[in-house]
Image (cartoon, rainbow, N blue to C red):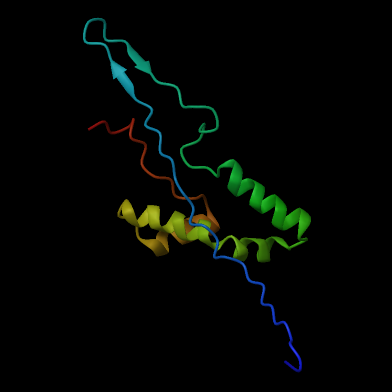
Length: 118
């Protein structure tokens, strides 16, 4: 052999898909006395829709360690927006209305299961 050269290519795997955990907090009506007893949401799930600690950590990393401006950090976290829109679609919402509300007034939230028990 006359000569040999090494060629290396470094690459990153695709980012993992976000996963969702849904908790159902029930309110039950006592048939005897008529009192309503409400369940408690687990720690870390106080709101009806929120980011988990992993998503928050990612945004802090992109902003703090990588010095990305808010706009670029938002683009880097586009998977979160896609999952939000997927949830809205699953609940029969019009995507344009959901996006308009997200960027102008207040974000769309999934219906509260306690408000309409099945």
